[in-house]
Image (cartoon, rainbow, N blue to C red; front, side, top):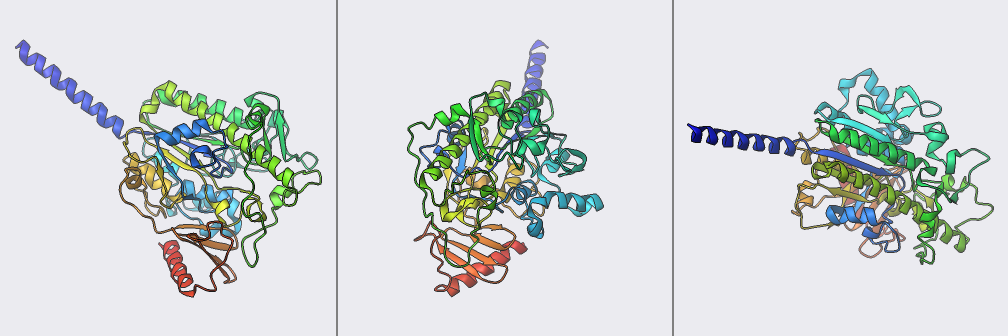
Length: 476
């Protein structure tokens, strides 16, 4: 009798362990870290002069996608693609308002739209929390100061959506904030500063402090969590605690590649957003020393963001949730540091469209740490649902990257991106750009990785081929 009882206890214990194992496997958490204006200017992506040890450590454990392209070179539409898994071409003329326009359509008929990524996870039992800049407005609200609770950027998405503002008073003030509560005003538009203070001297310090609190609470809950933390730096203005600028004392900053303004019809622009800041009569397009100084301040902002990434990952490990949490680090688009004569984003050149993407799932064993296959932002939504064993979302323009993470063969056709006046297709060997007036650009990356020579006129068959592929992809 005792032997039978003992065997029964062992069997029940085994069943319980199997149940807990299955439960944990089906309930992975997601930690999404979004970083504004971060081009692949990281040590782990080949920029060896950059001090980014925490992001480098994450890349060494996960998979760094070295050819990740966003679907739009501006904050609003790029984040729309991340959060919906769709290109959002219908909003291209009002691109930074894409999610707000979707919210209006949602209010009229919620069932007419597929769910956003956080809404999808929330519907599937996740606690979804947003801290900082995840959608276009930090905190996800509209209104004059981006703090109106009646104007929500992504309805029915977040269990909580939080934007600590401190002395900056409003999310709008924090978005372009300099040190200690100084918000950008017409009379205060310094493009860079290094303040001799602590991390919370800038809005990102407050965002991460709140993010750590939320992470600690979520890790104690039974329900799985989807936590998104959005950092603002290295977005303009280039301000950070001085200790991060000191990291680059004596460091050689690389010169600008192909700094010349391109000839012919391109998506070049006058760097209006950047030049609207106070440069005290200097112009980095003609002043080499000033350009190098700006690049150093950008690098320091990257290191400031990297420190926050380290704080987030350390807290995740401290809670013990790291063993069952997928971590995604994503830059919302690239940023020109003088290439093609541009300072800023918004173009359809490589510098505006390529950004870091790192995915780490502790339960997956992979033989690769870098993947050079072309991937795009719309792929993130279906990738996370597959990793979390949820049904793939319908109507997504993306493809799951799980096969690639598992080091199995996968080759995506191309990546699509657009701005208000043109649309582009990036394949392994070419970038094709079609303007709304019908003019085209074609760059052969096998011989011209800098995209300085438009070979469309001499390659009419390739233009027709890529134009057809582009049409096929955006109509799927």
